[in-house]
Amino acid sequence: MRRGRIWLFLLLIVIIGLVVAFVAVRQFVLPQRTEQPQATNVEVFVAGQNIPQCQPVSADNLSTISVPNDKVNAAEFTADKQPQLIGKVAKFPLDQGTVITTAMVTDSGQCQGGPGPQWAVQIPPGMTAVSIPASRLSMVSFGVDDGAHVNLNACYLFVDVDPSFQSTTPDNTAVLTATGFPQNSLPVLSMGVGAAGGPQGRLELDPSLQQPFLLIPSEAQRPRPVCQTILQDVVVMKRGDFPISGTAAQATQQQQQQQQAAAPTPDVITLIVSPQDAVTLTYMVYTNAQMMMSLRNPSDKSRLATEAATLQFLLSQYNIPVPAKLPYALQPRIDALAAPVLPNDGATTTTAP
Image 1 (cartoon, rainbow, N blue to C red):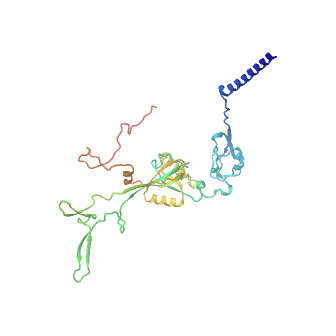
Image 2: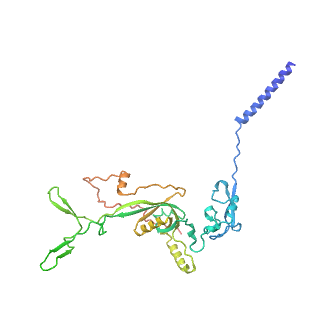
Image 3: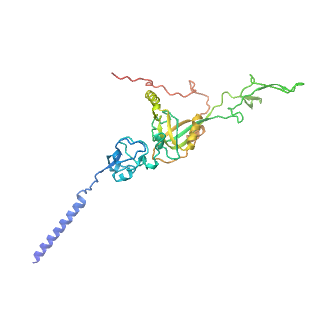
Protein backbone atom coordinates (compact mmCIF):
# COMPACT_ATOMS: atom_id res chain seq x y z
CA MET A 1 0.00 0.00 0.00
CA ARG A 2 2.78 2.39 0.92
CA ARG A 3 4.73 1.44 -2.20
CA GLY A 4 1.68 2.26 -4.37
CA ARG A 5 1.42 5.73 -2.83
CA ILE A 6 5.11 6.35 -3.47
CA TRP A 7 4.70 5.46 -7.15
CA LEU A 8 1.66 7.72 -7.33
CA PHE A 9 3.61 10.63 -5.86
CA LEU A 10 6.51 10.00 -8.23
CA LEU A 11 4.15 9.93 -11.20
CA LEU A 12 2.54 13.19 -10.08
CA ILE A 13 5.94 14.84 -9.67
CA VAL A 14 6.97 13.72 -13.16
CA ILE A 15 3.75 15.08 -14.68
CA ILE A 16 4.18 18.44 -12.91
CA GLY A 17 7.82 18.58 -14.06
CA LEU A 18 6.81 17.91 -17.66
CA VAL A 19 4.16 20.64 -17.52
CA VAL A 20 6.64 23.14 -16.06
CA ALA A 21 9.25 22.19 -18.67
CA PHE A 22 6.72 22.57 -21.48
CA VAL A 23 5.67 26.02 -20.28
CA ALA A 24 9.30 27.10 -19.86
CA VAL A 25 10.17 25.98 -23.38
CA ARG A 26 7.18 27.83 -24.82
CA GLN A 27 7.98 31.00 -22.92
CA PHE A 28 11.76 31.24 -23.04
CA VAL A 29 13.20 28.80 -25.59
CA LEU A 30 10.92 28.87 -28.61
CA PRO A 31 10.91 32.25 -30.44
CA GLN A 32 7.72 34.17 -30.08
CA ARG A 33 5.84 34.67 -33.27
CA THR A 34 4.08 37.97 -33.59
CA GLU A 35 1.58 38.30 -36.30
CA GLN A 36 2.54 41.09 -38.66
CA PRO A 37 -0.43 43.14 -39.73
CA GLN A 38 -0.94 42.72 -43.41
CA ALA A 39 -0.91 45.94 -45.41
CA THR A 40 -4.39 46.62 -46.68
CA ASN A 41 -5.30 48.71 -49.69
CA VAL A 42 -7.91 51.46 -49.67
CA GLU A 43 -9.95 52.70 -52.60
CA VAL A 44 -9.31 56.43 -53.22
CA PHE A 45 -11.49 58.52 -55.52
CA VAL A 46 -9.97 60.09 -58.65
CA ALA A 47 -11.47 61.97 -61.57
CA GLY A 48 -12.76 59.30 -63.93
CA GLN A 49 -12.94 61.88 -66.71
CA ASN A 50 -12.10 65.54 -67.20
CA ILE A 51 -14.26 67.56 -64.79
CA PRO A 52 -14.73 71.21 -65.87
CA GLN A 53 -14.64 74.06 -63.42
CA CYS A 54 -17.80 74.35 -61.28
CA GLN A 55 -19.03 71.01 -62.67
CA PRO A 56 -20.77 68.84 -60.02
CA VAL A 57 -18.92 65.74 -58.89
CA SER A 58 -21.06 62.64 -59.31
CA ALA A 59 -20.65 58.89 -59.39
CA ASP A 60 -20.59 59.04 -63.20
CA ASN A 61 -17.42 61.16 -63.42
CA LEU A 62 -15.58 59.44 -60.56
CA SER A 63 -13.31 56.44 -60.46
CA THR A 64 -11.16 54.78 -57.81
CA ILE A 65 -7.61 53.56 -57.48
CA SER A 66 -6.18 51.16 -54.93
CA VAL A 67 -3.68 52.79 -52.55
CA PRO A 68 -1.95 51.27 -49.48
CA ASN A 69 -3.62 52.33 -46.27
CA ASP A 70 -0.48 54.00 -44.91
CA LYS A 71 -0.14 56.14 -48.05
CA VAL A 72 -3.56 57.79 -47.80
CA ASN A 73 -3.69 61.27 -46.26
CA ALA A 74 -6.62 62.94 -44.56
CA ALA A 75 -7.32 65.28 -47.50
CA GLU A 76 -8.13 62.45 -49.91
CA PHE A 77 -11.59 60.92 -50.32
CA THR A 78 -11.90 57.21 -49.51
CA ALA A 79 -14.97 55.00 -49.89
CA ASP A 80 -16.30 55.92 -46.44
CA LYS A 81 -16.09 59.63 -47.40
CA GLN A 82 -18.06 59.26 -50.63
CA PRO A 83 -21.16 61.08 -49.26
CA GLN A 84 -18.94 64.09 -48.48
CA LEU A 85 -17.70 64.18 -52.09
CA ILE A 86 -20.83 63.57 -54.11
CA GLY A 87 -22.57 66.89 -54.80
CA LYS A 88 -19.46 69.03 -54.50
CA VAL A 89 -18.21 71.03 -57.50
CA ALA A 90 -14.70 71.38 -58.88
CA LYS A 91 -12.92 74.61 -57.92
CA PHE A 92 -10.87 74.41 -61.13
CA PRO A 93 -10.65 71.96 -64.05
CA LEU A 94 -9.62 68.47 -62.94
CA ASP A 95 -7.83 66.24 -65.43
CA GLN A 96 -8.73 62.58 -65.72
CA GLY A 97 -6.83 60.49 -63.17
CA THR A 98 -6.29 63.35 -60.71
CA VAL A 99 -6.57 62.27 -57.07
CA ILE A 100 -9.32 64.46 -55.62
CA THR A 101 -8.60 66.24 -52.33
CA THR A 102 -10.63 68.56 -50.16
CA ALA A 103 -8.78 71.60 -51.59
CA MET A 104 -10.02 70.79 -55.12
CA VAL A 105 -13.77 70.84 -54.44
CA THR A 106 -16.21 73.18 -52.78
CA ASP A 107 -19.93 73.74 -52.32
CA SER A 108 -21.91 74.65 -55.42
CA GLY A 109 -22.83 78.05 -54.01
CA GLN A 110 -19.20 79.00 -53.45
CA CYS A 111 -17.86 78.20 -56.92
CA GLN A 112 -16.65 81.33 -58.63
CA GLY A 113 -17.06 80.06 -62.15
CA GLY A 114 -18.54 82.08 -64.95
CA PRO A 115 -17.01 85.29 -66.35
CA GLY A 116 -13.29 85.66 -65.99
CA PRO A 117 -10.37 83.27 -66.24
CA GLN A 118 -10.80 79.80 -64.78
CA TRP A 119 -7.58 80.02 -62.75
CA ALA A 120 -8.81 83.03 -60.77
CA VAL A 121 -10.61 80.68 -58.39
CA GLN A 122 -7.22 79.56 -57.10
CA ILE A 123 -6.79 82.95 -55.43
CA PRO A 124 -8.07 82.88 -51.82
CA PRO A 125 -10.53 85.59 -50.81
CA GLY A 126 -8.77 88.80 -49.76
CA MET A 127 -5.66 87.98 -51.81
CA THR A 128 -4.51 89.02 -55.28
CA ALA A 129 -2.15 87.71 -57.96
CA VAL A 130 0.67 89.83 -59.37
CA SER A 131 3.44 89.00 -61.85
CA ILE A 132 7.07 90.02 -61.50
CA PRO A 133 10.07 89.54 -63.81
CA ALA A 134 12.02 86.33 -63.24
CA SER A 135 15.04 84.50 -64.55
CA ARG A 136 16.79 81.18 -64.08
CA LEU A 137 18.82 82.66 -61.23
CA SER A 138 15.90 84.33 -59.44
CA MET A 139 13.77 81.15 -59.70
CA VAL A 140 16.32 78.89 -57.98
CA SER A 141 17.52 77.38 -61.28
CA PHE A 142 13.87 76.83 -62.29
CA GLY A 143 13.30 74.86 -59.08
CA VAL A 144 10.31 77.15 -58.40
CA ASP A 145 7.15 75.80 -60.02
CA ASP A 146 3.38 76.21 -59.70
CA GLY A 147 2.24 75.88 -56.09
CA ALA A 148 5.71 76.32 -54.60
CA HIS A 149 6.25 78.33 -51.40
CA VAL A 150 9.02 80.92 -51.60
CA ASN A 151 10.59 83.85 -49.80
CA LEU A 152 11.20 86.99 -51.83
CA ASN A 153 14.43 88.95 -51.39
CA ALA A 154 15.15 92.34 -52.97
CA CYS A 155 18.25 94.47 -53.45
CA TYR A 156 18.48 98.25 -53.96
CA LEU A 157 21.24 100.77 -54.64
CA PHE A 158 21.18 103.93 -52.48
CA VAL A 159 22.89 107.27 -53.20
CA ASP A 160 22.98 110.60 -51.38
CA VAL A 161 20.96 113.38 -53.03
CA ASP A 162 20.54 117.09 -52.54
CA PRO A 163 17.19 117.52 -50.72
CA SER A 164 16.19 120.52 -52.84
CA PHE A 165 17.46 119.48 -56.28
CA GLN A 166 16.85 115.73 -55.73
CA SER A 167 20.08 115.14 -57.68
CA THR A 168 23.06 113.10 -56.57
CA THR A 169 25.71 114.88 -54.57
CA PRO A 170 28.12 116.57 -54.80
CA ASP A 171 26.44 119.54 -56.46
CA ASN A 172 28.21 121.31 -59.32
CA THR A 173 29.60 124.78 -58.71
CA ALA A 174 29.18 127.75 -61.05
CA VAL A 175 31.20 130.94 -61.74
CA LEU A 176 29.63 134.27 -60.80
CA THR A 177 30.72 137.22 -62.95
CA ALA A 178 29.82 140.90 -63.36
CA THR A 179 28.09 141.30 -60.08
CA GLY A 180 27.25 144.71 -58.70
CA PHE A 181 25.06 147.73 -59.28
CA PRO A 182 25.99 149.62 -62.50
CA GLN A 183 24.89 153.28 -62.75
CA ASN A 184 21.39 154.01 -64.01
CA SER A 185 20.58 150.28 -64.44
CA LEU A 186 19.26 147.31 -62.57
CA PRO A 187 21.65 144.94 -60.77
CA VAL A 188 23.35 142.52 -63.15
CA LEU A 189 24.18 138.91 -62.16
CA SER A 190 25.80 136.63 -64.72
CA MET A 191 26.28 132.91 -64.02
CA GLY A 192 28.04 130.25 -65.99
CA VAL A 193 29.66 126.85 -65.68
CA GLY A 194 33.09 126.94 -67.21
CA ALA A 195 36.58 125.69 -66.62
CA ALA A 196 36.55 127.15 -63.14
CA GLY A 197 33.32 125.33 -62.22
CA GLY A 198 32.95 121.69 -61.22
CA PRO A 199 31.78 119.37 -58.44
CA GLN A 200 31.45 120.95 -55.03
CA GLY A 201 34.51 120.11 -52.98
CA ARG A 202 35.62 120.17 -49.38
CA LEU A 203 38.12 122.57 -47.84
CA GLU A 204 41.00 120.81 -46.09
CA LEU A 205 44.13 122.04 -44.29
CA ASP A 206 47.44 120.52 -45.37
CA PRO A 207 49.13 119.21 -42.18
CA SER A 208 52.64 119.79 -43.54
CA LEU A 209 52.38 123.22 -45.16
CA GLN A 210 49.48 124.44 -43.04
CA GLN A 211 47.85 125.72 -46.22
CA PRO A 212 44.17 125.28 -47.12
CA PHE A 213 43.29 123.44 -50.32
CA LEU A 214 40.08 122.24 -51.97
CA LEU A 215 39.32 118.55 -52.33
CA ILE A 216 37.00 117.55 -55.18
CA PRO A 217 35.63 114.01 -55.92
CA SER A 218 37.72 111.90 -58.27
CA GLU A 219 34.67 110.00 -59.54
CA ALA A 220 30.90 109.94 -59.37
CA GLN A 221 29.27 108.86 -56.13
CA ARG A 222 29.35 105.11 -55.61
CA PRO A 223 25.89 103.62 -54.85
CA ARG A 224 25.54 101.61 -51.65
CA PRO A 225 23.75 98.24 -52.10
CA VAL A 226 21.44 96.73 -49.51
CA CYS A 227 19.45 93.45 -49.66
CA GLN A 228 16.61 92.30 -47.43
CA THR A 229 13.84 89.70 -47.27
CA ILE A 230 10.63 91.45 -48.33
CA LEU A 231 7.99 88.67 -48.27
CA GLN A 232 7.93 85.24 -46.63
CA ASP A 233 5.94 82.08 -47.41
CA VAL A 234 4.47 83.36 -50.68
CA VAL A 235 2.57 80.86 -52.85
CA VAL A 236 3.50 80.71 -56.55
CA MET A 237 0.38 80.68 -58.70
CA LYS A 238 2.02 80.26 -62.09
CA ARG A 239 5.50 80.07 -63.56
CA GLY A 240 5.51 81.58 -67.03
CA ASP A 241 2.56 82.82 -69.06
CA PHE A 242 -1.07 81.80 -68.69
CA PRO A 243 -2.68 80.32 -71.81
CA ILE A 244 -4.64 82.75 -73.93
CA SER A 245 -8.29 81.71 -74.34
CA GLY A 246 -10.91 82.78 -76.85
CA THR A 247 -11.33 82.43 -80.60
CA ALA A 248 -10.08 85.93 -81.34
CA ALA A 249 -6.79 85.14 -79.61
CA GLN A 250 -6.09 81.80 -81.32
CA ALA A 251 -3.59 83.34 -83.75
CA THR A 252 -1.81 85.11 -80.90
CA GLN A 253 -1.79 81.90 -78.87
CA GLN A 254 -0.28 79.93 -81.75
CA GLN A 255 2.35 82.63 -82.19
CA GLN A 256 3.17 82.50 -78.48
CA GLN A 257 3.40 78.71 -78.60
CA GLN A 258 5.86 78.95 -81.47
CA GLN A 259 7.90 81.50 -79.55
CA GLN A 260 7.84 79.32 -76.43
CA ALA A 261 8.96 76.31 -78.48
CA ALA A 262 11.94 78.33 -79.72
CA ALA A 263 12.68 79.88 -76.31
CA PRO A 264 10.84 77.95 -73.56
CA THR A 265 12.57 79.81 -70.73
CA PRO A 266 9.93 81.56 -68.56
CA ASP A 267 10.69 85.19 -67.76
CA VAL A 268 7.78 86.01 -65.43
CA ILE A 269 6.28 84.44 -62.33
CA THR A 270 2.90 85.11 -60.71
CA LEU A 271 2.63 85.25 -56.91
CA ILE A 272 -0.44 85.20 -54.63
CA VAL A 273 -0.05 88.10 -52.21
CA SER A 274 -2.15 90.54 -50.22
CA PRO A 275 -3.33 93.76 -51.94
CA GLN A 276 -0.76 95.80 -49.98
CA ASP A 277 2.05 93.43 -50.99
CA ALA A 278 0.87 93.69 -54.60
CA VAL A 279 1.29 97.48 -54.43
CA THR A 280 4.75 97.01 -52.89
CA LEU A 281 5.81 94.61 -55.66
CA THR A 282 4.50 97.00 -58.31
CA TYR A 283 6.63 99.80 -56.84
CA MET A 284 9.67 97.53 -56.71
CA VAL A 285 9.25 96.44 -60.33
CA TYR A 286 9.11 100.05 -61.55
CA THR A 287 11.99 101.19 -59.33
CA ASN A 288 14.37 98.56 -60.75
CA ALA A 289 14.69 96.46 -57.61
CA GLN A 290 16.56 93.21 -58.21
CA MET A 291 14.41 90.42 -56.77
CA MET A 292 15.36 86.82 -56.05
CA MET A 293 13.31 83.93 -54.65
CA SER A 294 14.42 81.27 -52.20
CA LEU A 295 12.54 77.96 -52.18
CA ARG A 296 11.09 76.68 -48.90
CA ASN A 297 9.28 73.58 -47.64
CA PRO A 298 5.50 74.01 -48.13
CA SER A 299 4.85 72.55 -44.67
CA ASP A 300 7.13 75.14 -43.03
CA LYS A 301 4.94 78.02 -41.82
CA SER A 302 7.60 79.80 -39.75
CA ARG A 303 8.44 83.47 -40.24
CA LEU A 304 11.98 84.48 -39.28
CA ALA A 305 13.24 88.01 -38.81
CA THR A 306 16.25 88.69 -41.02
CA GLU A 307 18.85 91.46 -41.00
CA ALA A 308 19.49 93.49 -44.11
CA ALA A 309 22.75 92.63 -45.85
CA THR A 310 25.10 95.59 -46.30
CA LEU A 311 28.87 95.87 -46.56
CA GLN A 312 29.08 96.75 -42.86
CA PHE A 313 26.87 93.76 -41.96
CA LEU A 314 29.08 91.35 -43.94
CA LEU A 315 32.28 92.63 -42.33
CA SER A 316 30.93 92.36 -38.79
CA GLN A 317 28.73 89.26 -39.11
CA TYR A 318 31.26 87.06 -40.89
CA ASN A 319 34.38 88.55 -39.31
CA ILE A 320 35.84 89.75 -42.62
CA PRO A 321 38.88 91.98 -41.99
CA VAL A 322 39.62 95.05 -44.08
CA PRO A 323 43.03 94.38 -45.72
CA ALA A 324 45.86 96.46 -44.31
CA LYS A 325 47.88 98.81 -46.51
CA LEU A 326 51.19 97.01 -46.93
CA PRO A 327 54.48 98.15 -48.54
CA TYR A 328 54.08 95.37 -51.11
CA ALA A 329 51.30 94.12 -53.44
CA LEU A 330 50.41 91.42 -55.94
CA GLN A 331 51.79 91.46 -59.45
CA PRO A 332 50.18 91.72 -61.95
CA ARG A 333 47.76 94.35 -60.70
CA ILE A 334 44.25 93.07 -59.86
CA ASP A 335 41.41 95.56 -60.27
CA ALA A 336 38.52 93.08 -60.62
CA LEU A 337 37.81 89.48 -59.61
CA ALA A 338 37.40 87.13 -62.57
CA ALA A 339 36.47 83.47 -62.62
CA PRO A 340 39.31 81.19 -63.75
CA VAL A 341 39.17 79.79 -67.27
CA LEU A 342 39.00 75.99 -67.12
CA PRO A 343 40.17 73.63 -69.88
CA ASN A 344 36.65 72.25 -70.47
CA ASP A 345 34.98 75.66 -70.73
CA GLY A 346 33.31 76.05 -74.09
CA ALA A 347 34.03 72.46 -75.13
CA THR A 348 31.42 70.96 -77.41
CA THR A 349 30.30 67.36 -77.17
CA THR A 350 29.77 65.47 -80.40
CA THR A 351 27.87 62.24 -80.68
CA ALA A 352 28.41 59.54 -83.26
CA PRO A 353 25.67 59.23 -85.88
